[in-house]
Image 1 (cartoon, rainbow, N blue to C red):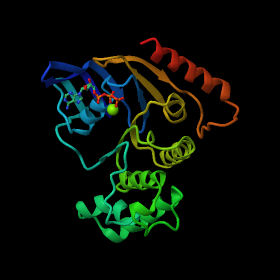
Image 2: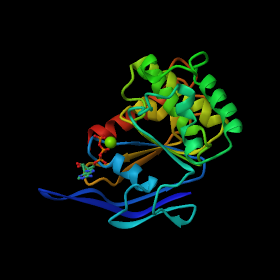
Image 3: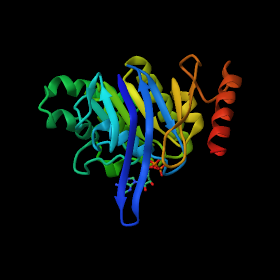
Image 4: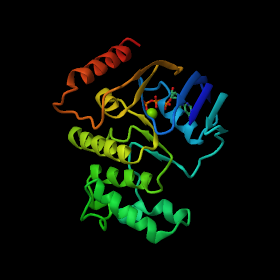
Length: 250
Ligand SMILES: Nc1ncnc2c1ncn2[C@@H]1O[C@H](COP(=O)(O)OP(=O)(O)OP(=O)(O)O)[C@@H](O)[C@H]1O
Ligand SMILES: [Mg+2]
């Protein structure tokens, strides 16, 4: 589905060339949930921007369904650390924004927007404006906005890292439920190892600058997974410990 072959990306700065990624190879299959972890500055956001078509590689190729990625695509949604909602629009109005921009049938998508907002626990808040919502609620709205068009590919750059720990766990569980119901191919950048183990089929560990794939770990735990007590606690803890050691010894 998504293939990166010997992908490099460098930036020219006042202090010279900065290599963010070098010779990175990565294959992501249709519907797979991939989490990307790695130290700050190792190129995770750069990797997402390359897949999103917001940035061109300086070497190698990025392809999606066999075609080179050269620009942003309507079937690829991107979600950031901060929700970036339009303050003058309601929660529902923000979720509907991509639909209106692309001129899709409003009535049909409105029903879906309502359903999504309810799924993430925002029943009763559809008509509120962003300033009337907590940070966690705003990020839920942003998640609905990313999902409204049923994207084939969902790219998420530390989407929950500005939230308190409990809200963050709740949102991860909701994302898991949504992924199970309709699996989009997902690339999820996070600094949280437990979050990666909860959500991902495969965790990609990027090495320090310039980033390249240092290790991949397949998480074979059955879904739905949970953070609390469950019969796979020991296996999950083993994955977390393994990833922790990999990151720390980089
Ligand atoms: N537009 C740019 N111009 C110059 N340098 C850049 C640019 N974008 C990224 N870089 C550099 O590329 C490297 C990788 O940056 P990137 O933002 O991808 O890291 P990251 O892994 O997402 O870090 P973090 O975990 O802190 O978000 C860094 O050294 C950064 O300074
Ligand atoms: Mg980043």
